Length: 476
Image 1 (cartoon, helix red, strand yellow):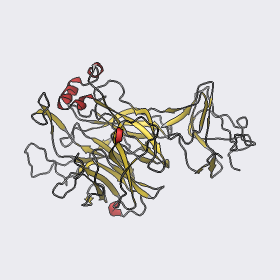
Image 2: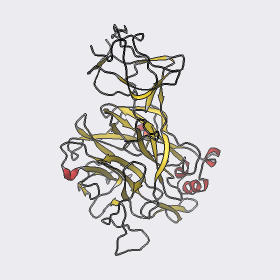
Image 3: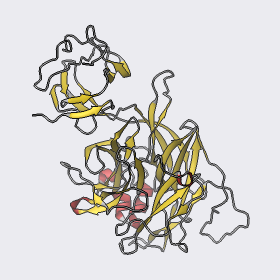
Image 4: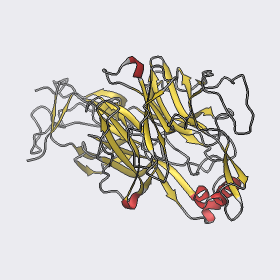
């Protein structure tokens, strides 16, 4: 007996293999490519710099808030010496900053003075320079903010004073001193911290994040771990109250060739919140070769190589994974966010770190449906400021079933659903079309719902209503 999948009235996506039980003819699953749009932020303020990143972003009322690590390093002689004598120098303390937008394209820096900018050049001012810094670490108070990642708490029981939440870490190779700290805020600007770490015993040396899972009724955290032959990996933990957390466990990624994963960017997909999407960064540590010397920004790459070879040799790109339940995911090994053309600022260690969060933004095509927008880092670790670029994607458009002119077929598992309507997110060519057949568990067409009964579907809509001869829906 085939397993029946109960979907209620939910939207379902072809992102984890569940909905495509069988593909026949020329039908296949195809990953869609995000479209590169404009650069929305150049981190060129003194308190920012070339290693700014770790984006977390969400819509809050009529504003879009984007938080990020504000950090810069310089290449000097004398620190962390290599054979060539070069090293890194941090230009200022590790800050987290925030910018705002009404449309997801034009971002502005709000002006605060509660966290002064303190360059490490001995210059002290009695008059704080207005900046958009929201928090910095405080060793005297015992908290740290590496990978500080903010979310808007959608738990209906969350108090107003804790409407914004965040995780930040003290990271180290010495696991006896590391810790993950929980932060709360009423306004997303002034933060309180729980003095004792909520989790210990892991490196936490990446963007560690959390969110409220409305389907499971708990907070979920995803963090950097190290796991067997994978090396850099992703672990997860849950909490009923953002204070008491389960011991972190490695997520499951069955059937995948081990690779090193930096960030994770797991989030509920807002149009289908029972599906968790993740966008980890794949870290590839190559060896210096002729192809390396043909990559952009060679002089800067050589400087980084002289500090530590992997700084010049490693390359990063974005992946996609999807799951239900929070611990087991389908990781697609094909790159979702590729380094792209050999342009200055690309093909680096730290390139294409995708931020956490997706929002809907108006299409550039006027009355077309809105698009998904997200943001990724470019120009990381170079001799000039890092930049954040917007990318767009069709609504629900992560994976699709596609077929050639000769046709193909996708068969779902047996489904139990609520309601009497069926909509498809569909795009055809002028010559292409789609038809839908409802079948019994043994594969026989239901009377009145065969392919021959289905009205031909062609066009491009995210909500195409399927109909059969004499039937506008599929109710019993």
